[in-house]
Amino acid sequence: MTSHAEEPPLTVDELAARAGVTVRTVRFYSTRGLLPPPVIGPRRVGHYGAEHLARLALIEELQHQGMTLAGIERYLRQLPPDLSDRDLAIHRAVVASWAPETVETVSRDELARRAGRTLGDDEVDRLVAMDVVRPDGDGYRVDLGLLRLGVRLLDVPVSQEAIMAAREVLIEHSRAAAHELARLLRGEVAERDAQDARSLSAHMQPLVVQALLTTFQRSLREELGEWLSSSRPV
Image 1 (cartoon, one colour):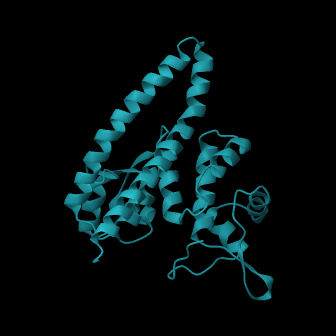
Image 2 (image 1 turned 90 degrees about the horizontal axis):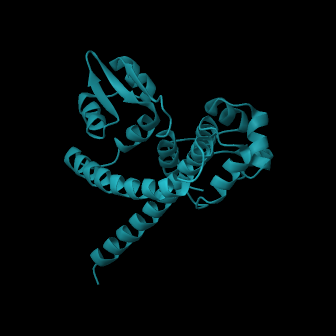
């Protein structure tokens, strides 16, 4: 499990408080295998990290999307076991994108509060470039499902121009993939009644998102691995 030096380990009580759940819920998820075991420290005290917190947030988002406990278990079992908290945050952001009401208009102060940090003008500009927030009068329309991920990306040493170019690439190819997947699903539900079609769509959406995201992560890891290997001096 990846740990971050700037974030001290959490006790089960601290983890539950940060995640907004009860200790009983944390232990229940652990017994069901939804959370990896903690690191046992001195005095047999379990220590939890950022990955546990991110996994709890993902579980909560899947619940908000109406997925059953069995469905959540299947979803998490199919994830790579070594995902970092950043990887899990990406999964949560993508799952949250299915939610119909994730955009709010907030003030600059409220935007900073939701982000959990002070935001300079250049940082707000980067969030705008990533289409996480949009100026709206005296405030900002913010996609709450993507805000946490966008704030994490603020610390990545990439120029705003590169972010905008990357966004255009992702939009172009994701729309093409979405078009083909929608065509396949339309063929699948064509012979079903409206209720069955809606049910199939609701269950398929998070699974399709997971498949796309996992495939993209693996492909990107391979591409970056090949690039780093070729750039090493012989």
